[in-house]
Image 1: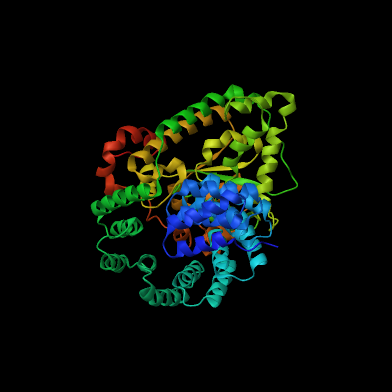
Image 2: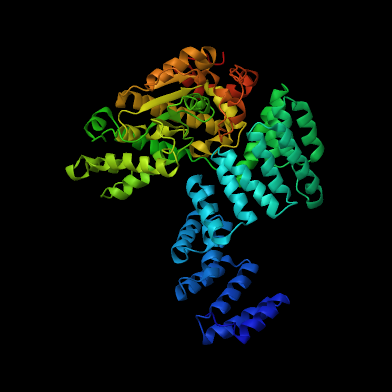
Length: 571
C-alpha cells in the first residue's frame, strides 16, 4: 500500500499551486533531507523543476526516484516524456524500454513506446504497443487515434478507419480526429465521405482555432483545381508556415508559374530544415562512401562468405533507387501480381549495420569489420543477417499472405548493396532510374528525409546524387551480380513491354492485373500514393525543363551523371 503524502509535501503542493515555487521547492528539500527516498516529494520536486524549465535538474530528480524505486510509475513515464519533449530521441527510447521492463502492465508505458517507435517508422512494433495499451487501459481516444495513425501509415486503411471512428464516438466534436477520418476516406477513394468529414472538422475548427486549410487545398489540387487551392491558401494567411509554403509552391508549379514555384520550394524547404534541425553532412557522406568502396572491391567481395537461399519462406524483391524515381510505381505494379506482397519501405537493410557491428569482434568500425566473417567461426554471419531480415519481415506481417515474394522499396538501399548480396545472393534486385533533374525537382517539392537529409536544398540533392552515382558505378564493377536497371521514362513509354521484363527478372509469369496497377486497392503510404492510383501517364516526364535556368549553375557537377545515365543534359 502506498503511503499518503507527508504534510511537508502537501504544504509544498499548496505553495506550488499558489505560485510560490521557491517555497514549494524549499518544503520539498526539507522533506527530502529527512527522507531522501520519499517518492511524493521527489515527484513534486521534478514537477517544480520542469515548470522552471530546469530540465537537467528535473531529469536528475526523476532518475533519483527510479534509483530508489525502479517501478515508480510517475518517474519512469515522466522521464520518457521529458526526454522526448527535449528531442533526445535515443535516451527517450531507452527510458521507454526501461519503463516497459519495469512496468509491463502499464498502459502509459506502452503508449509512450508506441509513439517513439512510430516516429522511427517501426510501425508494426508501434502497432503492437498501441494495441497492448488498449488491452490494459480499455477504449481510450488518444490510444485509438495513435493506433489508427499507425495503421494508416502502413497502408491498412480498412483497419485504421474503425479506430478513428471509435475515437470519434468516445470523444465527439474533436476536429483533428474528424480530419483523420476524412484522410482515411480519401485514401479509400471515397471523396464524398472525405469532404463530409472535412466540413465537420472545419466547422469545429472555427471554434477551437484549428486550421484545415492545407487539407482542403490538397483535395482541391487532387481534383485538378490548383487555382482554387492557391486562392484558398492565400486567403488563409499572409504569413503561411513552411508546410503551406511548400504546398503553395506545388500549386504554382501546376499553374505554370515556374520561377515563383522554384522560389517557393527553396524558401519552404530551407524553413523546414531549420525548424526540424535537418542538415546534410557532406563530409560524413564522403567518408562513409569511401570506406564502402575501399572495403567492397571485386577481390574482397569474392572471398566473403555468402548465405544460402532459404526455400521455406517468402523472399524479398529489392527495388532500389533515389526517392521519387518510380519505386512506388514498380512496387504497386508488382504487388498487383498474386504472387507478390507489398512490403513498402522496410528498414531492415539499414539495421544490418548495427547487427554486424554487434555480432563481430574487433575494434574496426563498420564496414571494415565485415572482414571478420572470413574466419571460419564467423562464416555463419551472412546467414544470421538473412534470418534477421526474414524474422523482421515476419513481425511486419509480410508472411501472412503466404505469397512467394514481397517487395522492399526503401529508397537508397543501394548504399548497402554488398550486404544484400551477402545475405540474399540470389535475390531479385531492380534499380529504378529517372532523369536526375526530374528527381531533384520532385524531391525539392516534398518533405523527405531520405538520403542523409539531402532533400532540403538543390545543391545537397545534387551532391548526394553525384555521390550515389559514383558508389553505384563502383558496385557495378565490383559485385558482378545482375541487377535490372529500369528507366522510369521507358516504363511509361512501353508499359507492357517493361512490365514483362520486370516480371521475367523476378521469375514471375504475366498477370493482367499488373497492367492495371492503378486499380490496386492497396494504399501506398508514400507521397506517390495519388499518382499510382491513377492510370499511367507521362505528365511527370521532363517536368524539370521549365526550370532549366535554375539548374544551370549545377550542371558542371550533375551533367556527367545525366549523360552517363543516357539522358540529354541542358545545352
